[in-house]
Image 1 (spheres, rainbow, N blue to C red):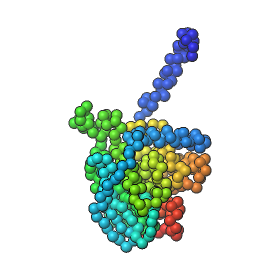
Image 2 (image 1 turned 90 degrees about the vertical axis):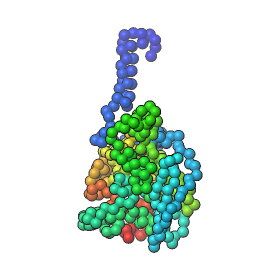
Image 3 (image 1 turned 45 degrees about the vertical axis):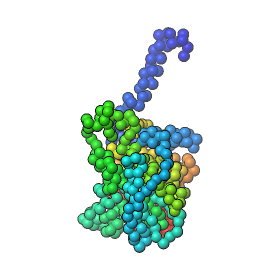
Image 4 (image 1 turned 60 degrees about the vertical axis):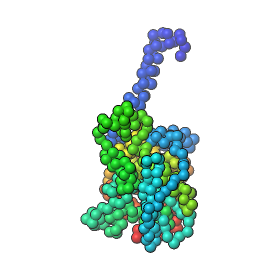
Length: 385
């Protein structure tokens, strides 16, 4: 706009209006995000348009999680501090530092009687009581079997370990690792990471501050970021194991473990297939403090985060929770997205009428997914032993 035009009353008025419009588009002036928001995904029209958008969203996730610039892939000195030997698999007890003072803890499952290299599946457990040691109890498992949600008593009582065992029987290595504050991951407390609701005056000052303070948020240090760092370093570690097939690395988890699944898969191309259960939707995006971070969902959401998997295979389940509309809201757009990229066969999603879960029905769908995409050669249908 020329100086003469700006100098006129009409020109000045137009300039003020333009400035006002620009200010109105500032995301800081938008309505606050909450658990009742709506987060749709509009697929790009061309691969070129998506490539540009994907780079932007991927970087936004990394920045929000505090992992940009990307963490250096330094040598990991893992400690194996115990081993359980079963007929068809072994379980090793593992811990290592992801960053000074921050630990990754978990179990490494290995198939027996098979020769590698083996596919690897990372298995974040999600918000289940006691984490990877979750026991649903004798009463609940009987109710689940009666309802058709589970098939066997042992697998139904310990569904998180059951999926690791079955994947190992199918010929995969599995790393079942803790969320912070769960099981052995007690370097930071459960209440701090997953139940924070009230500021701590002694940890929110200029000199002394901790997670969820203004100082922490300004430095992009968050519970989501620390768990994402642990996921990245878990992936670094399993990729360093000689017996792991680098071309077949998957990840699957439910609920908060589903969030960890699609966040890691979105930002790290080493993941070659992902199966987030009961978490991808246009509705509630994550009900725990560990699933949210400053900047994370500005102009985007979990459906688009899942879309970042493409063209890599993506599988999802939904339940009678915030994900229940996935087949009509989210999955059609993801199918359009994968079709646009030339791989319509690489995305599946299914709603099952059970409460929030990773039950036998959902696990069976996941087994078939990895059997297909990792070419495991198992007869279908796969029946959990």
